[in-house]
Image 1 (cartoon, rainbow, N blue to C red):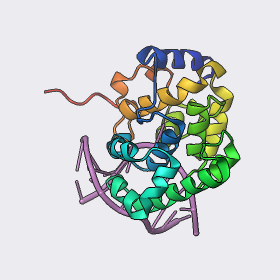
Image 2 (cartoon, rainbow, N blue to C red):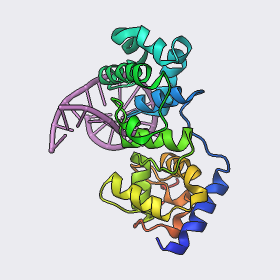
Image 3 (cartoon, protein in one colour):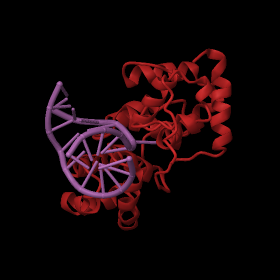
Amino acid sequence: MEAQDIEPFFATLKAANPMPASELEYSTVFELLAAVLLSAQATDAGVNKATRKLFTVANTPQAILALGQEGLEAHIKTIGLYRMKAKHLLETCRILVEVHGGKVPRDREALEALPGVGRKTANVVLNVAFGEEAMAVDTHIFRVSNRTGLAPGKDVVEVERRLMERVPRAYLQDAHHWLILHGRYVCVARLPKCWQCAVARWCDYQPKTPPPAVR
DNA sequence: ATCCCGAGGG
DNA sequence: CCCTCTGGAT
């Protein structure tokens, strides 16, 4: 993808989705942090199903802590990787209470020091919750960035660096969601739907996937 | 590089 | 059955 393609590329994604938002359900910064932590290698539909009940019972670090390991596991068992996620979220809640006054820190190092919170989760919180200049590279963004040639890279850090270089600042917030939604519904991992892709004309991916045979 | 791990889709 | 899902820790 050429540099002059960036603007029309994002303008086209914007037209398809004028007001993109996370499909994870949350109503506070802490809920966002918890939901993203739980979403590792899981679908957000599955995470939402669990957090709708969980957040009704407990949506503060103190309340989560009161559930304990087994109580929390019972709420998130359907998500997958549930033992480690419960353990990490509890320890994260303990640190939030004891070190950060019960609030989510607006600071990359402090976020990444939380168990279960890596670079990607920290970037989501910084970008979505705090409006900082950050770009979280998840499985969708990694795939779309490489396929299209928007920001190719061998690992997520390299893709993130190129996105930060190439994505216009005005698009930095929404681009995160545009790329995820595009990856989730059109530029899917298995058989990308190139025949219904609005940005195929600027995409490096070859061969374009043909439409399924009609009979 | 490997493990964690259940749900949903093809 | 196989693959994938807004990864992180060891």
